[in-house]
Amino acid sequence: MSRVVSGARSLESPLEASVVTAGVFDGVHRGHHALIRRAVEFARDHRIPSVAYTFDPHPAKLLAPAMAPRMLMSVDERARMLHSLGIDLVVVEPFDHAFSELSADEWIADCLLPPLRPRHVVVGYNFTYGKARAGHVEHLRRAGEHFGF
Image 1 (cartoon, rainbow, N blue to C red):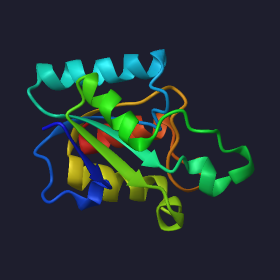
Image 2 (cartoon, rainbow, N blue to C red):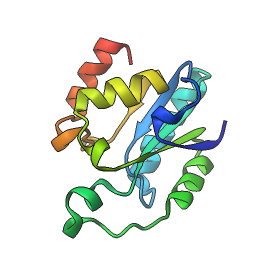
Image 3 (tube, rainbow, N blue to C red):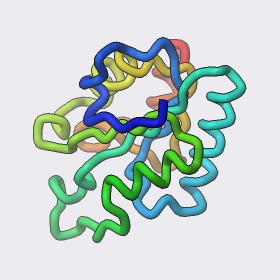
Image 4 (cartoon, rainbow, N blue to C red):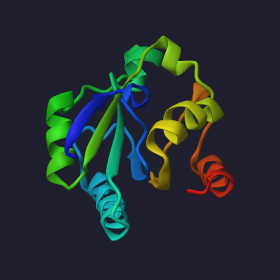
């Protein structure tokens, strides 16, 4: 597969199944490598595509511009690095005002489930998502139990 799409909802057709790892992945540091490796191994073991779901710009740039970190890599560099680590598909979600208003449940229902159909989701211990960062690892775990990932 080895491709990049702008936003999960822009996929021409939903994936049949996938393993998703989500985060900004700027710099793709050692912790990112561990997440990516786990996602890629699970995907290969189950013969389904691995997906890195990332954001551009960094959410803080829109939500707290004064605190936004300086990016270490361009989106293209991030995608190349993720592909070099075995990721099949990179979803670069445009982080705009409308996206920032999605609740945690809306993100799962609109951006994760229908287009990517994850069987497994791999995130870091401090991953948050949804409006006001309401979604967290335990929320995602409960959603996984409910939706089968």
